[in-house]
Amino acid sequence: MQYNIRKRENHRHALVSEVPLWNNGLTFHQLGLILCAAFSLVGIVSSFFLAFMHAIHYSKPREQRHIMRILFMVPIYCAESFLSFYFYQKSVYFEVLGSCYEAFALSSFFTLLCHYAAPDLHSQKDYFRGIRPKPWLWPLNWLAKCCGGERGCWRTPRSGLTWFNVIWISIYQYCFIRVAMTIVAVVTEAFGKYCEASVSPAFAHVWVLVIESISVSIAMYCLIQFYFQVHKDMAQYSPFLKVLAIKLVIFLSFWQSTVISFLSSAGAIKVSDKLANQDIQIGLSNLLLCIEMAIFAILHFFAFPWQPYRLKNQQASENPQYIKGQIAYHGGPLGIKAFIESFNPWDLVKATGRGFRWLFVGYKKRTNDISYMNRDDSAFSLKASDDHDAQTSIPGPNVTAYTGPAGINTAYHPASQYDPYDEEGQNLLSHAQDNPHSRYPPEAPYEEESGNRYYNHIYSHDDPSIGDLTAAEPRPISPRPYQPYHPSRSPYEGA
Image (cartoon, rainbow, N blue to C red):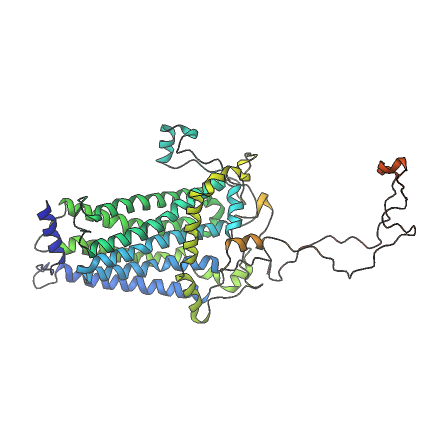
């Protein structure tokens, strides 16, 4: 067994030696390199063009930042696959580093869906406090029935906010696990203990594979659960096409290589004169991935179009993003600022930290949240539909999912402007309204003829009616007309 493993590893690092597929033709390795280069070029050029169009039309940074991160997944996978095919002796390093971006893209897609539901974290908490979580999809619904039902460990949370936090940590844990397993793979490969050709528990490869498989399965399951909960509230964003694009990319990139690795290790795919061991272990999965990425690059034009973010479309929309009181492009010259923002992972690092903080600290006080108190069957959503979802939606004309706690319309927040650099605490402060003030200049206090400012009746300590408020005559009403308070509104709202 040990001899066979070492033999496969030596074949993997040896030079490719194959006979041509036809007389005086190309070998499989040569043909694979040509196809990888061609399809990679299509995928990279298409994705960079779409990302560039988003960058120069960067009118809604809170959404487009995450869209650009998702679009970059195709060029990164294409480059990683081609380099792995060409430099097959060092393919482990390209594969683990390239696949690490997968977690980055998945968490960005989840954050994008959250922004579709509500503009910032504070609003998202308000939104999810009001929903009634749907039962878990299969297989957790089956496990719940077998493990105590609604009192068991697989029960559906009673609070929408707790459900949201469970989904949050279940998706962001993949960022931590994937990065950790990438470090493990690189270190063990450097010391000769990784052994990608083996499924023996004596090497790190099988353990990394099992841990990553569990982690990505949890993340993808919770992403689909999240979609089924809120998809009707964000139907205007075509969420199904977006979910399909991201799910297929991650599914094919991870499970495709995993299945091929297991089949080759088990001997189901065998070496021949026309198909060398390196092309089975490395070339086959990377060739398929390059072809698939070119297809997904075209699909992204329909799933993540840039046209809705043009200024005239944003000014006509009901939920634009105001930054410093205006709707404008914020990507800088040639979208350079937009590219820098999209490659800055600090917001995802903070989101991962928030998830673990809730998991180890915040969950202890979760039942103190208002979402656990006075629960009723009312729903919390705004999707206009005659056949609305009783779990999440209530009828309404608004196009955005969030209108504030208890359905109060907060489509415009004059203090927040949804600046992309806001911290969670700043988001909380951004929802505070200014103190009301009058449009009239200050006047002298009203003085009454009696000399007493509040009542005409003069009291003494011996007066028996001192405790009888009915004996007091109220002060005359000021002659100034009543002016109701109206919060300030942006001149761009409704434009």
